[in-house]
Amino acid sequence: MTNFLKTIGLALVILAGIFLFSQLIPAASIEISPTNEEIAPKKETGFSKIISLLPLNKNGQASPKNILLLGHPGPGYLAADLTDTIILVHLSSAGEKLILISLPRDLLVKVPQGENLVKINSLYQLVGIEGLKEKVSEITGLPVDHYLMVDLTVVEEVISLVDGLNVYVPENIHDPYFPGPHYTYQVFNLAAGWRYLDGENALKYIRTRYTSPNGDFDRMARQQQIIRLVKQKVLSLNPLWDWPIYLNIFHQLQSHLQTDLGLIEIKNLYQVIKGMETNQINHIVIDKKQTDLLTGGLVPFGQQMVSVVYPRAGQENYSEIKEYINKAINKY
Image 1 (cartoon, helix red, strand yellow):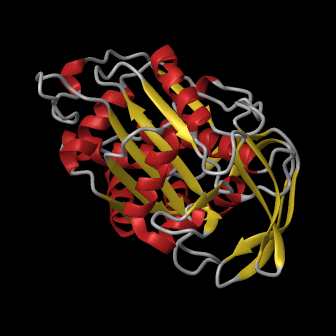
Image 2 (cartoon, rainbow, N blue to C red):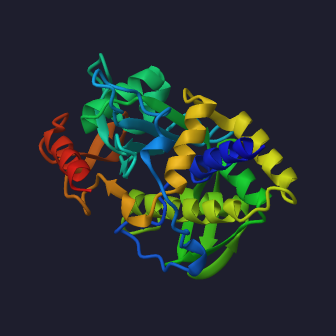
Image 3 (cartoon, helix red, strand yellow):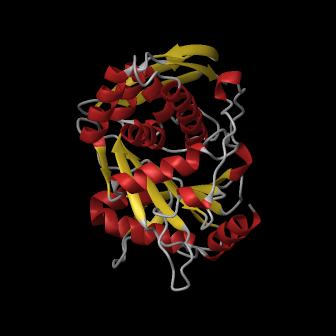
């Protein structure tokens, strides 16, 4: 029973934000005031917890693990298969540090084994998961060992199951073109300050991006914020009295989750992450502002001009990005 609940807990922590595990690491592009409820208790961690998760090299030592985390709108939404959340999670070989590498959805890339240029968020629907993994590996310089993908419907359902979240909204939000179900648009308004968000509005909060000065990068910060809050809410549930909630969450994950991770691997990954302290988890946002690795502008797509970003070193030149990531891995 305990292992089963931990398995559910991990999938939720990984998913519930979908956008994964940012255990108390706010992005620099948005300032969100922390609360006591967001401060995770300190716990011990160690190599023994990940020995069955990480593969051994020829010397019998564990190797680093890289897991690609993806979020997409899902059935019934406009552009249902666009992976608007793309995060590569790097777990060190000793299990003492976790680095989240966020790639912007508007990154202009060449289709693997092709010549066409597209936004990276469309690769999954064009070439499938293997093609997307190949491209992410090319950009970051890191092999992609596993993937975990969830559609956004589960975020709304899970937050509703835990009776919503109290969220600090740092600035007013007004989005007159928020994508709704069945290929519609809606108006989404949210005033700054502390707000109670049910599942539907929490989902809108993490998806809207056209009302913030930093667009996609502010959206990634809101995703991290919601992940932290969902994690705390789920971990506060009583395994005995709240068993029906756990069971409903499990059913939601079964319906909306795709991954090549096994249950044992998921359980062990959860064991590692929940025992980490704040300074063991770091987040890298590959962007124009925070890391200055990208530039961008408008490019023609069909009959319209579309805003994209691409490496400052040149189109398809990922040398600076890979060097930055490598230094970050060795630094933290």
